[in-house]
Image (cartoon, rainbow, N blue to C red; front, top):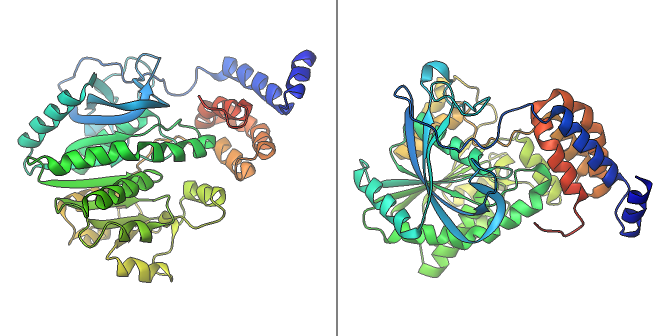
Length: 416
């Protein structure tokens, strides 16, 4: 161990790193088997009691090495497409709004979310899938979902399937998923991954604009995914001198952005109807605010305060403040009475307590975030030390703890 520390000292690596790494691997040996399993995308046989949701996936993620994961958090050289079918257990064994993650493999479709189909396809097959499903849909509409920060591929797939099923949305589901490493300390990497994915999402939107079978396009984005959605729309509007009329609705849930006004202005006069869902008690956005120099994130503003109130009104933005809404409160439905159907369906789910992420942050993760500040090494190391006991009792901390240590152990500026 002394020789190991000496080598790291010469390389400029803080002595806390090898100690934390050793502690983390010891921790994995003791507690690594706890928590939910990974590799849940390995297909199983269908069960007649379960519902099914089919979706098309476009992604800039690299292929995963482990079976049942399909795509990793690393960046691919070019977009990839996949056809997915997710089995959802009956409502009698699952609360609406929740993903019933399997506790063991293979999953049981009678009680768990399960994968029935997970097939990578080429662009031609993806276009054929979309054309076929749009023609069979009742209104020719498409719903594009762009997930947020700290999401694994399976998180986005199962969560989107749940949203489609529980909302009753009849639109054809298209998941646009970008390379997120699924780690709280990978904020910078995830943010750059959204920029990396802008062209791919714009190409998807351009295709939907050209396809005569597609009559209406709605976009639901969450957290950091809002930056990707807005930038892709902005880029498309500049290239095409505007956006097509079929782009009806853009739903921004807890957006991790702060330059919203200029992005909207660049889209021109003909633009979609924007619905903004904000919550002033969003802890993830509180971390983001610290990382970005204490600049307020759009998803955590008070929409009744200046200058936000005036800017939102000037741009015709519908705002729904979820801060004080409690699950089961039927009064919230009136907020969507004048909204298009897809916004009303999704909005009603959000107001009922629907979450849009499965990032699985634990108590220890928040300790790490609190001590890390803008991800300075010394602060992060302190947070990991303090969080170690929490990892023993909290399963979400337990799952993420080694990822935090690995991020700390990487040399500055290293990429995978």
